[in-house]
Every structure is written in C-alpha cells, then in structure tokens.
Amino acid sequence: MAVPTSASASASAAAQPGAPDAAHEPARARRWRLSRSRKLAAGLLIVGFFALLATVGAALASGATTVGDDVLLAPSAGHWLGTTDTGQDVFKLLLLGSRGSLLIGVVAASAAVAVSTVIGVVGGYLGGAADEFLSLLTNVVLVLPGLPLVIMITDYVGNRSLLVIALVIAFTTWAAPARVLRSQVLSLRSRDYVAAAKVSGERTWRIMAFEILPNLIPIIASQFVFGLILAILTDAGLAFLGLGNLDGRTWGSMLYFAQNGQALQLGAWWWFVPPGACIALAGTGLSLINFGLDELLNPRLRTWKGARS
Image (tube, rainbow, N blue to C red):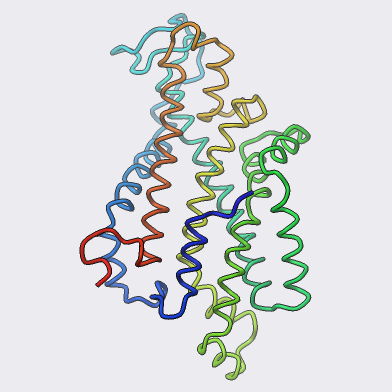
C-alpha cells in the first residue's frame, strides 16, 4: 500500500533544517493558525456532523430494521429518505450506518496508529538489529497488496463482527505510517535535547516517551485521519462485495442490499444515493482535516493571508 502523501510531506518538511517545529510552537500561535485554516474548520464541521449522527442515531433510529408494508416509497414527510424493498426506513438505516461505519473507522485507525507508533519509534530510536528486524517486517507488509489481503482474511475468518473487520483493516494499514514515523525519529534522535537527556542518564523508554513522542503528535494525528478515511472506504468496499458484516448496519451494507434489491434498475435512487453521499462527504471532511493539519505542519502550504509571517 502507498505511503500517505500528506503525512510524508509533513515529515519531510519538519525534518528539513530551519523548518518550523510545530511541536515547539507557542500554544497561542497554534490556536491562531487553527482558527485561520478554513480547510480544517470545514472538515471539523463535516466530521462533527457525522459524529453527532452516530451518537444520537441509536435513539432516533428505533425500529430501523423492522420490515413493513410501505415498500419502495419515495421520500416524503412520513419517510424523509424513502423506504427499501422490505419497507425499512432509509433515513433510520442511514443513522445506524453512520454509527457502524465511524466505529469501524475509529477502531481501525486507532489500532493501526498504535502499532505503527510503537514500531516506528522503537525501531527508529534504537537502531541496530531491532531496527533492521522491524524495518523488514514493515517492508514485508508494505509489499503485500492491501485490498486483496483484506478480502482473503475476511473471507477466511468466520466471525465478521464490526470489531473483527476493524482489526483486519488495521492489520493491513499500519506499515505505511510506521515507515513515516521511523524516518522522522531518525532525524529527532540526533537533536541536542535528546543528546542532553542521554547524558543526564534518562532511561531509553523515558527518552522515547517524553522527548521523541511529543514531537511526533502532529504527524500521528495526520496519520490517524488518513487511517480513518482508508478504514471507512475499505469497509464500504468489503460490504459492497458481501464480505463485510451484513448483520451490523454500515453505509457499505446499505449499498450491498440496494444492489441486491436492484435499486438502480427500479429507479429507487433514494436507497443507494444517501449512503454513497455520506461516504463521499465523510471522506471529504476527513481529507480537509488532513490538508488543514498539513498546512499547520508545513508553512509552505499555508494559503491564508499572513500565514507565513
């Protein structure tokens, strides 16, 4: 799988001599830049909207899976987004799908970032045989085709719960962030404050946790957002192919049932357009957040007036 472009650019910019160190900027300057980034603000607004839907969805979507007699009704006052071929309300299904898709995305991204952070920081800082072994492991996972590997594992695993799907996605996506973090650690470990910590007798784990890791937080945040996008899209692809968790509602499972119900041939656009639009809109919002974080890390990318001053 390809290394995330924006995070790689951020890491390269941070590693260049004379480049601003985002982790050491005053908090006031960081808050000012956050408020001036329109991309970041728009992305947070979009993702916050879906997070709200996922949070309150369970309360508003009671009876979403109940089969009824109102089959393939177009959007109306009674059914805001119409109904399916089994009489289920599409709007309520969409609320449940928001929770399922975001849950998979958050769990998969968190697990992948946790593994990549440990491997990237430990390998990059220790060097030697440990770094060679972890780099070999990372390279092996990187050369494996991501989507076919996910399909093969999910097809082999009998239990296709949301948690299992998320962990499978995390297993196939941790390698690229680990490589980015390792390259940044190789630069950070030669800094003066790290050398001073070594001379003062600080233990290795404390240097990695309190001297190295805080400087990686902006890059880790960018990697988390990228992993969230990838996990949501991967889950949607798996569910559309019938390999995801079809018992638990996600946006991808809605597309799967719409395809099987021949929604396109029947002209029931309200069945497949809303979940597809949610996937596209959530991906757009997360991408805007990623671009905004990248602007905070790399001053050359800032577009608002006075950003480089």
